[in-house]
Length: 107
Length: 117
Image 1 (cartoon, helix red, strand yellow):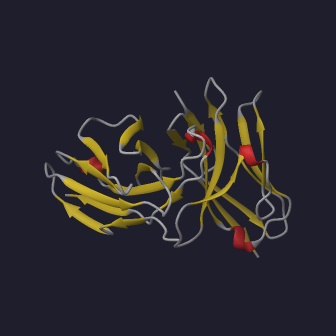
Image 2 (cartoon, each protein chain N blue to C red; image 1 turned 90 degrees about the vertical axis):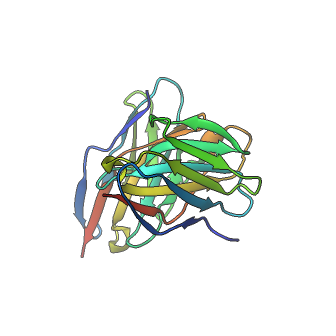
């Protein structure tokens, strides 16, 4: 069965500090992994996906198959990064989301 | 380009009733997924439709059913409502891609808040 775990419900950092949002998954094959973000009063939207290997808004995420992790990182957090972040796994038409981490970046 | 829309915004039903939620996919998208999001939890996958056929299903009972129409809009039907069905129901559409749906970005609607009393 597919499972995604985000161990931190809440994460608070100061502006300019590094931030890492953890995501662990369980899946026996080679899944596709995503990070979605939901800003206050906005819809859930894609932040980045593993296959693109891109950096969006300064965020990166590396797939570690050995540790089955897909942690989201940003070297210098900004106040506008405050939002709810969801890690998601997708395979063959089925998507599994974690329960999310609320990131608060304090001034 | 029109984004994903859902109707109604809010809905109140009583236990045992039936409900139909509607979703219009983003222009050019032919795949629709439905999710249930309870308070404090992430979206839980209900099912996905591709070209009017169910393409994948999560761990939801048969009283959760769906339809996709030729214009790729979709409905989620829930029969015999239970109190635990109270949640935000999200619809997401995505493009066809290469036929492997795993890579596709999903575009979410604003959701329908269902309350079952």
